[in-house]
Amino acid sequence: MPINILMPALSPTMEKGNLAKWLKKEGDTVKSGDIIAEIETDKATMEYEAVDEGTIARILVPAGTADVAVNAPIAVLAVEGEVVTAVADAAVKPSSKPAGEAKPAAAPAAAGQGAALAPAPVPSPSAPPAAAAPRSNGDGRQFASPLARRLAKEAGIDVGRIEGSGPHGRVVARDVEAAQQGKGLRPAGAAAASAGKAAPAPSAAPMPALAPSDEAVKALYPEGSYDFVPHDQMRRIIAQRLVVAKQTIPHFYLTVTCTIDGLLAAREAVNAAAPKDKDGKPAWKLSVNDFVIKALAMGLKTVPDANVTWTEAGMLKHKAADVAVAVAIPGGLITPVVRNADAKSLSAISAEMKDFATRARARRLKPEEYQGGATAVSNLGMYGIEEFAAVINPPHATILAVGTAAQVPVVQNGKIEIATQMKITLSTDHRAVDGALGAEFLGAVKRFIENPVMMVV
Image (cartoon, rainbow, N blue to C red):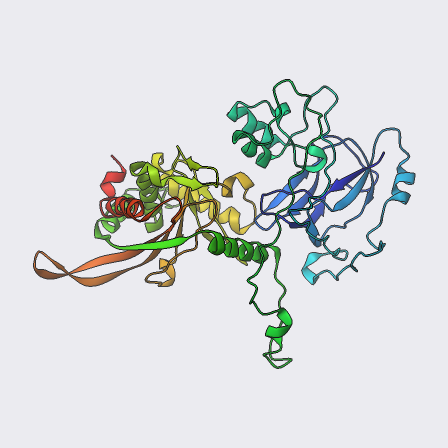
C-alpha cells in the first residue's frame, strides 16, 4: 500500500510547521535517510529525512506552505511493486475538500508558491490520533533518527527497545529522553516492530475563562483604526508556554544588588590581553553577560540542591551546570543552552554565545542546542532596564533576570563613594527551590559576580 509522508514533530512544542522547500520532486526515488524537505519550526529550519523507501507519487503540500499541522499528510510515497501513476491519481490533492474539512487559506505573500492548507485540528489529550505501527528496515532494527540513535547510544539504551512516536513509529529524540525515565521502554528481547503509540501533539494552553474573545476586543476599537497582524508560529508557542508557566508554576522572586567594578576591571584586562589576527581583530571580546553565565553555572555547582527540575513524581537533580541564555530574534526569542558552563573558560563561553546568536537569528539552531538546561539568564541591561522579574521557562526551576549597570553613590567604610552596581533578580519555582534555598543560591551567584577571580581558580 502507498505510504503517507507526514509533517513531522521536530520539537516537543511543535504543533504546526512551515514547509519551506522540497528537495525531491514527484517521480523521484528516495531511500531511508535521504533529505527530502526543509521544515521551518517555531525555532529553526531543519532537514526532514525519509523513513521509508519508494517513489514520490504525489506532493500534497507545495513548498512555501505555512502552518501545516503535525501528522498531516504532505506527500504520498509509492512503494516497490506499485504503479506510481495509479498511486498519484488516487492521492488526495490539496485542492480537494473532503466533507467537514475547512477551506484552504490564502498563503501570505512571503510564503512563496502555492496556497496554505488549512491546518488540521489539534487532537485533544483525551483522544490522541491513532499511530501507525513502528516500521523496521527488515533486519529487526527499529527506524530511528540519527540524533535519537546517538542519544540512545550515549545513554546505553538499545534503540530497538524504545517505543517510537515519530512518523510510522520512528524513534525520535523525545522518545530517548522518555526511555531514560523508564517510559515507553519495551522489555528486553521484545521485537522492535511491536506496535507503539504516538505521543499526541501538545494542545494549546486554555485561556482563562474570563478572557474576552477576539471579536469582543476588536469591537472596542473603530473599524479601520488598526491593522490586524495574525500570529506566526513562534508567537503562538511563546504565548502558550508563558500561559502554562504562569498558570502551573508558583513563582517567587529574590533580588540583590551586585557591585561589579571588579568584574568590569577584569573584563577590561582580559579583553586587552586577547591576541589579534593579521587584521587586528581580537581572538575574543568578553561581555558582562559572559561573566553572568559563568557565575550562574558556578552557583549551581556551589548549591547543587538548586540545580533541579520539578516533576510530579519526583525531582530531577542535574549533574551538569547547563545554562540557557535568552537570545532575541525577529518575532520572539530562543534560549540556546551553554552545556557544562562551569567548566568552560570565559572566552569559550563568549565564542559559543556569539555562534549561537548568529545561528539563532538565521533559524539554524538544532533542537538539542536549545532544549533542556537547568536554569536560564535573561539580560535586558543593554536596553537600560534597571530591574525586572523574568518568567520561568519550563522545565527549568529558576531564571536570572539581569538589569543595567550604573554608577551610584554608596556608603563604604563610613564614606560616600561611587560604585558601579547592577541588580539581579532570581525567579524560582517554589515547588522545587524554596525561599531559603533560593536565597543561598542567589547569594552564591552574587559572590562570583563580585569576585570574578573565583571563577578562574
